[in-house]
Image (cartoon, rainbow, N blue to C red; front, side):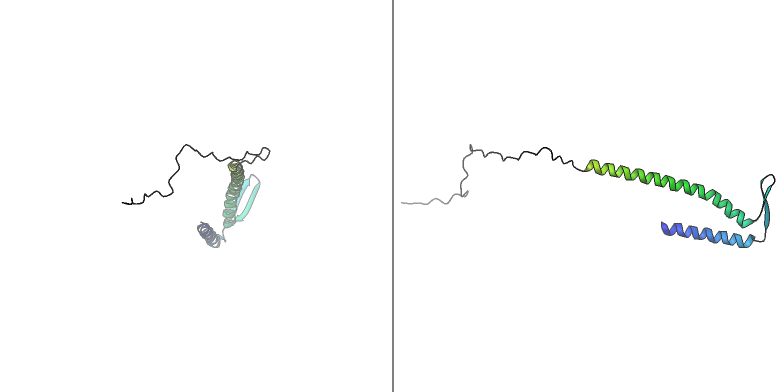
Length: 121
């Protein structure tokens, strides 16, 4: 994304430079208020007009970006704090005792396979 932005800025700069070289000899009068006249060249007027439109929007964008990044950081911190397990060291937990062995069951044979019966006379 950074390369696309750089290419666009370079193309804009080349366009402004080409426009400036082509129109540098033309001088115009710009009437700002009655009695105030600005005698300037066309490229200077175009560049100043561009900056008057760009700078306030860029400042607004940076302010919104700053505000949202602060909000996201705060939400991430709150989420991390809530997701962490709470450890309460004031009351110790009782030890877990094993369940008692049930003695009702018959003991299992040591050899589950019965040996072959022997025939004794």
